[in-house]
Length: 129
Image 1 (cartoon, rainbow, N blue to C red):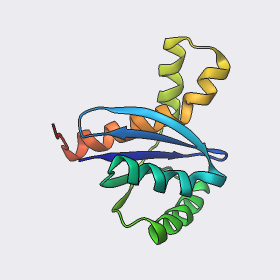
Image 2: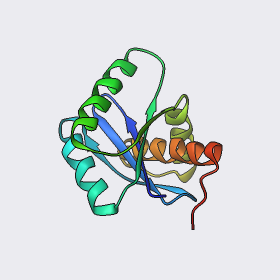
Image 3: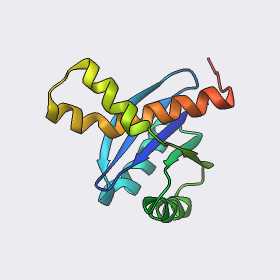
Image 4: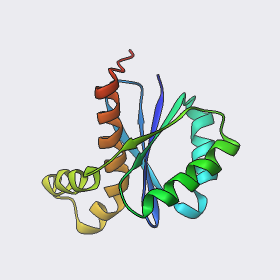
């Protein structure tokens, strides 16, 4: 199953892709252009499900509004998945790689999306080859 994982942030949305084994960060997009970019990626890649990370707190309302917008233009199943601490884990992973600070900031959301998507896959036992 082809999955697209999204890590929704204040300015950027990180995007990760998986075919059911491992996830990898694809890129980040600005929130302003996210809907168009995500719809385009889903069509190009043949995505079958979106998994969108949702934390606790105020941003959850914004994420639910974003999901409502996506549902209007994208006829795919969308799963909201607890992403608590995925951004922290992403920061720790990127620190171990020791890329420059600017490079880490640019990759944080897509790395968090990949971590969240991997957790979804493992807990739902999705393993396609």
